[in-house]
Image 1 (cartoon, rainbow, N blue to C red):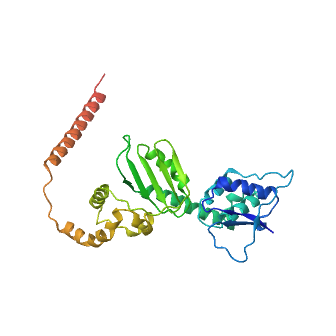
Image 2 (image 1 turned 60 degrees about the vertical axis):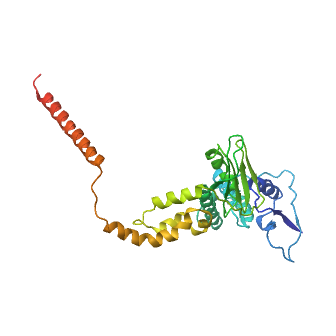
Image 3 (image 1 turned 90 degrees about the horizontal axis):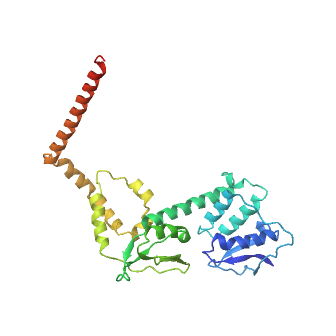
Length: 298
């Protein structure tokens, strides 16, 4: 007989917590509990899992806020071993209260790395989701759809961001890990995986025009660009289709800029310079008058 649970891939901290508590109250050490993901491949050696029975009078686990926050974060990660890692940290933290602060500990180092990846995935989603208008406005509210491919289960984490920022429109964000839908009042999360839809609207061309107009061929920093926007996001962004051609054309554009003859400054430039000179002269006059007044006998 083996103790453990079979969990859905999108199982959150709030769903995992009572199961971990049950294992702890049953006094089952981490090596006695098996945490399986429902999507994991089954083998002939997999045995049926049963939930452990809590012992009478057992004391519940206690965690410091830092450790609790770390567990909440790593359980949004896509690594299928995250449940076992979280329970091991919970178990150890009972005799090592400051465990979450020991960055060199192997379990904590791994958890911190997972936390960093979840945080970056959350940031990238808030930065690179592109909404496209869909259908006609209903009751004065326009409808939008977006497609994104997060690495981890971060949809519930980003829901408040999108709900507050795009409160005046109805929208749906579809991903392979579920979806978010906002109707002006509530934001609904569904764990059902979505297929990539065909999305486009008239704003795509406007956005491309803006992107090209702000591109500076003399200040190309490809490594910095890729560190902020890795190539895996390019396929879902309208402007990134233009990047290869813009990079190819950059040397010629820079050469043309260098060869361009200087042109006279526009008329307003001279008026602006004269206005600045008048202001400076007035400041000098006021300063001289104050000095004369200061030195005059009273």
